[in-house]
Length: 318
Image (tube, rainbow, N blue to C red):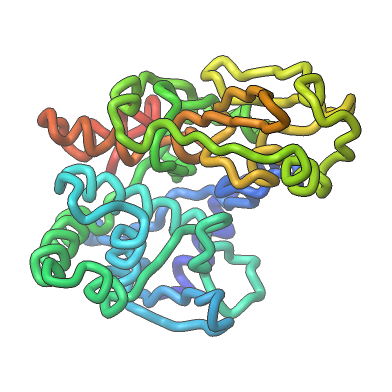
């Protein structure tokens, strides 16, 4: 079955504009193709095992597709979230997995468990240990959500969409082009103002001047440890920092965020009494589906399809 799938993908795949190599995110090098279907309308890929690389152990394991999607949902979204939100996460995770199936890939795995480039993953055993006394109920809840939508994927103009997601938006989601430079008509800014209600929406971190200088040394030389050290902040339309200057050197907001381990690139910086205080809003890159927003919408009666189509503009779920 894999051979049929690979052959079809090679015929259907078409070249897309690629992102800069420095954009270390879930949109890099994703092949795009429609999923081949058998005569009975079912996908060949549903029967194929997933070969996932466990980065911590540097080993590849082969598991059933359902178990893989279960493991992604269990790792990426709180089990306490509404069932419709869990379903939306399952469809987004499955669609993302399909975009990672590259017929030209010479490696012995399909995808990794590295959330910075692919998707997080946790085994059933590890998930149950994490959930403790609620393990039976949570496993049943997530398993049921996954099974009810397994095989559904998000398409844009008949092709697989890049279903990136994040924890909490800034209050609106970002345009992908503002964050990573690639034009994706369905990854555009949409309202997610209810994310501001999350108890994790704001985080504040304080750095001593010397610590601030040390952490930023990997991207710029900090010359003046004062309020003028950071200047010329340019923001995206959604409010994230696109670029800024550190002692005159321009760096991206993403690099600044990474160097200081900030929750998001939407932040405000103040300098007082020799210390830098940074207040961030949201959690993650803010492109695509907000997981917190998905749960909020589910609580208000929205279905998983309505949630997905809110965050992935002009797409379909099939």
